[in-house]
Length: 306
Image 1 (cartoon, one colour):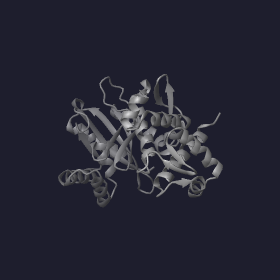
Image 2: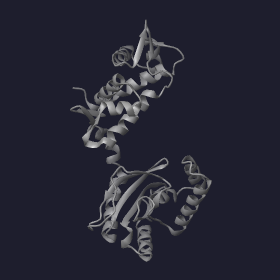
Image 3: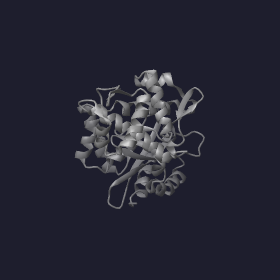
């Protein structure tokens, strides 16, 4: 039985073959595809047969044309969209017909795509529905075992013990902030998020804390990518500047009504930002003086670089 690494390579080759054919100005032969990909012809031949049988390619004599011609990234976009649909469906799964409608592909192409994702370790069949495959954890293992994350768990525990509130760890990914670790408050009424939650970097204390270590020019560039509008962009820039001056960021009811947060960036030994520690709490529980005390405490805890 093929292992996950082999399955992932098969899926990757399939997408690479489709992309090579779709980007070409004219239909390609097996030899031309193999040369363009720098892959052995027998390997490419097996992939071509699979894609042709699945309805992704059309062959005229010795030359191949992609059925979804006109966009060299169509198939890759289908995979990304399908993954999003599977993730949103959770353990209940989702019908192939629903995915087909969401990604704007016909039923035959969707079934072939899902079969390719199953062989690549991305999806599994669950009766008549499809779910994300647990084999995806193998792909995420480098993130799960990241030394930065594991090294900050002790700090997160200290902060939770000191404050009695939930503590999250965010990592910036481009213009987004992603929650990668969460320690819930021991109190019966608490505020916490699911690991994997993603927000634009301009939202909340966590986003501003992620921007604090950046130069203003870099901050402006990132915010420009979000297309906020000039007034909103300048407001965020001003808020980040105030957070830099205070040494921590705070927010109230920005992402969730009635929820507050205090956050600080964590830097490595080179002074580069690697993560954000975020204290999350129900707004009714803290007065302004307590919020400031949390901010000063967190700033002290995150002063030393990793």
